[in-house]
Image (tube, rainbow, N blue to C red; front, side):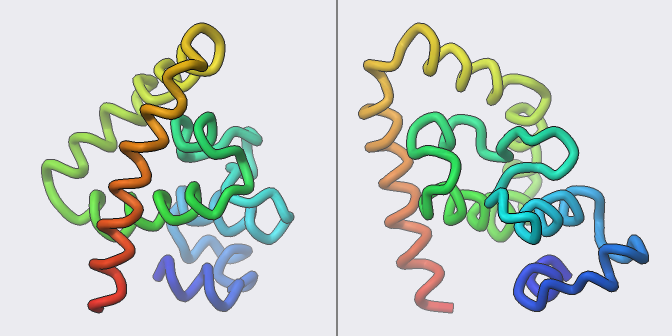
Length: 125
């Protein structure tokens, strides 16, 4: 459902509420040209990745796809996402941005490993 709404830009599904709230915000944000920002709040979905790479970076989109296609499909991944979106991820991103910008290269290296691994896995599918 997510891929169909995202790839086809299914505006009908959005207007009729036939996709989930999270998906609606993501697709609506994409349609308004705000990249991965949520349509309702203007904040990015991937808080830490956005601090590390920037709002419109391709890496942020890849990590969003990893979240949606890998993490959200397992019980442990859902627990991680619940913790991250309960405020933990946003708090860490704000701390990095304001007080620890020297850690950005370290986070980038870790996220680059996830991106590389996910890209290899995704190519096999």
